Length: 298
Image (cartoon, rainbow, N blue to C red; front, side):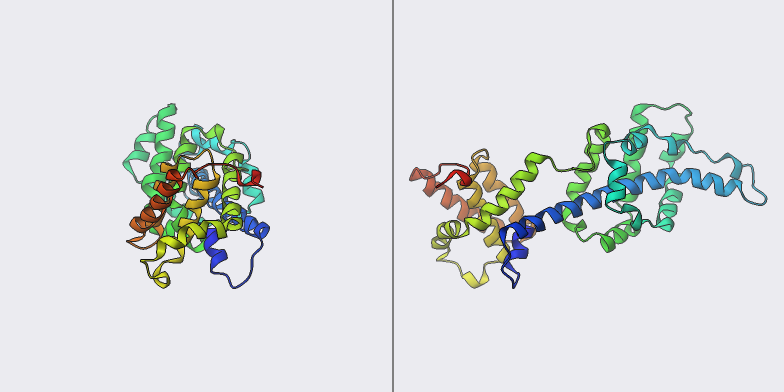
């Protein structure tokens, strides 16, 4: 959707292959954002070791300075994440460390150590798998995400935060559940990546045919007032209805209603629903709703 919007609003004629590269670049931005937030979690937790060294090296350290608890730095979930396939390589390849903000890391760490949850965690010397996971989830959900400082820093450095925030939270939850199953070098599965690319190419290459189905149903609407995004969403919806055999029509229509509600105008959900449902019923009635891969068509 975002890539098509960029194409439609561009003053240049963008070839299909370049459009696919634009899509891939957006996927890479999401991977970079996710990787940074994971890296930030590891930086905050491992700051316990830095704090311990700094306080112990004071000219006249107190007993408290000499007894900084560093249990969190050895958190078992944390180390599973850092040892997950491709994590260290991704940090290097995407230059994640250039987004380091030592003062922000220190600030969140200090807030973390003052919480009852953290104090309870370090009061127990043993490591319980459930507790190891629970404290990392608490750090992310209750301190990092609600932090205005963190979000400001993320928004300043990653343009996709507003669009990707909800998905990033879901991905993070999945990572906490099964850290060893994540491959940071390819967060999007080959199947999903192929689907995204195929949908983009179909919406571009089959634009005329899709619009031929949409335009007759816009007679009662002022075309000048129809949001560009609504037209794009309907085009994508028609492309899915016609050319993606594995996606149920109900799923397609509901998906684009939700996207219209989320990203377009207050009336867009109802508008997109009406147009797509109308097209679906007519194609179904005429026996024209045959889902085949567009590449196989003559």
